[in-house]
Image (cartoon, rainbow, N blue to C red; front, side, top):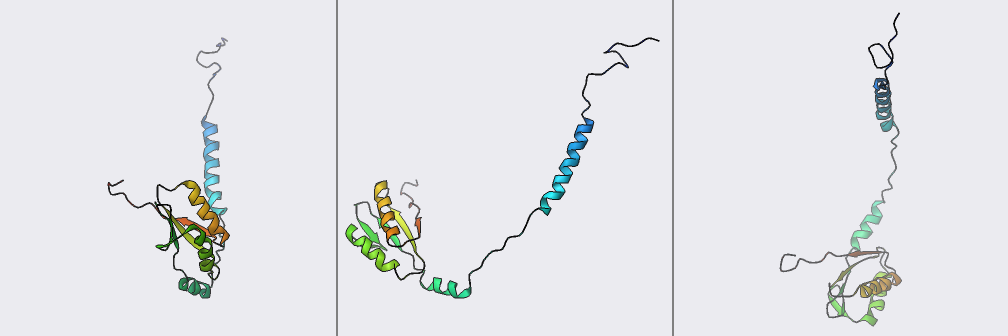
Length: 141
């Protein structure tokens, strides 16, 4: 009755048997693949009534505030001075239900000028401010 000491054939093996671990992982993967779609829930979307969409289309003329390279301002291509800007924005946005303004600034204008114009627009009741993209340069940049 000879007994084999570790390392020989029929002795104790020091290798880990990974087959049961892989089986468990595959079962968990299948369980997660089945239960994940069941957890999704629908959410309700509130669609505005048709009356509101009609009134929006009637007063949806876009207002563009341009900060020109020479330091001036233009509202829908009509030049105006800085002191006139606040009064003109109040005149336009007080009766409007949609308070949206687009700002187009020359690349040479300072960041502070744009922030100041945004602050005046917020004071006039503008709720959403968008920026128009820079126009393509003549050199293709």
